[in-house]
Length: 208
Image 1 (cartoon, rainbow, N blue to C red):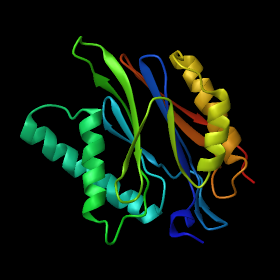
Image 2: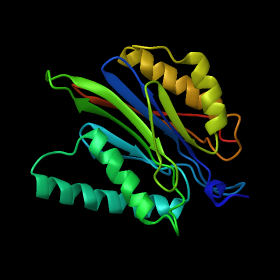
Image 3: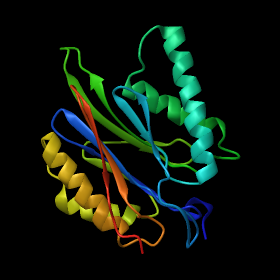
Image 4: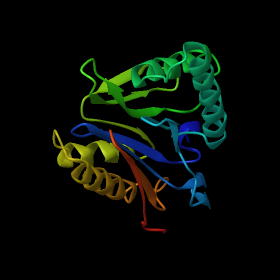
């Protein structure tokens, strides 16, 4: 049993047309034993950035507060809101600082970055537990159901999805993937980020 799988949980982020979505399951377990069915793994960083933290439950809480502190310090020092690309490198460097005794977390980031023309471009990224960045143009996954998420997402994702279509795609992906993984599931939460709003929906799933 890997320590990464001890508490279970999975996260996926997906790109659409001028929008981005991130979703996670709500299960917290102790291996096969279920502990909680409302454990949040996705946290807002700014109005345009969300961070998913699948992995060891105690490190989820620790890193959530550490990143909140570092983002606040950046905002105070730079007098502006952090951009998604900058935040991804902040996450990477924070994890790499602890490479000899790493946090058992594989972060997933999703957000909208400003373009020079004044518009917004979707951005997603993920890292491993020592901060190696992986940028993608379609979707990124992490957690115990990651192999199932890859398979379903490969079949369902299409370029330039509208927000509602993106919500449907990411919802079907995560619901079908976690049903095939014993350590993930028990409901899902989905955030769809557009330039005008953030839509958050909670999905009911199998509880067995």
